[in-house]
Length: 252
Image (cartoon, rainbow, N blue to C red; front, top):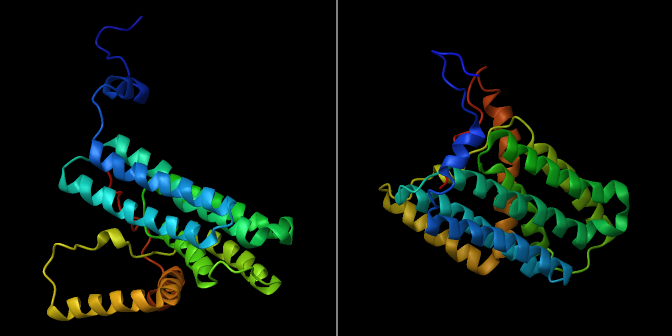
């Protein structure tokens, strides 16, 4: 029995049940589904030992992930459903898929201590997404390091030294994803803002470099980004106590 003068305390599942018939925003959700599909496709290609194609599928997933939030914002189609769906897709594309690629490409023959690094990569990536419920640059950047390394090696059979190096890399990337280092997010870039003419020249030059030396370029970009957090800590120092560590998620 409810006492007079007191309202029934509502629970989150009540609100979700009331909203379940409101529908979803189709186009942003299709982009997120494309992100999810690319992560799944990457694992299928890794099973077939098509390492380079598997790594490229992860990069396509990154493009889909960058687009869905911006499209949702332009369409004013943001929703809690989109946030949750995007986070689940990110776990597959940027945690499970690169971890499986690392394991199947290099870590499997090294034993438990090595392939556990792939599992730690998966766990730390999922923990970061669950902790902040945001898509910051760190998790896809770690996936980018794994994928670009496979592309740099051109899918050739790695030597034992390379396998050990990749095992160590998987541990380092996992720890960076759950660290307190601050990373700049690609989603903070405003492409609609006016830029100096020199910016266009830099972009054109970057496109030319990607077209001619994409293996080295991708590895340097994502590897440099992964190291930018610790480098920033050394140069700038720790952020003030109480400062917001991560931006709010932009999704649909």
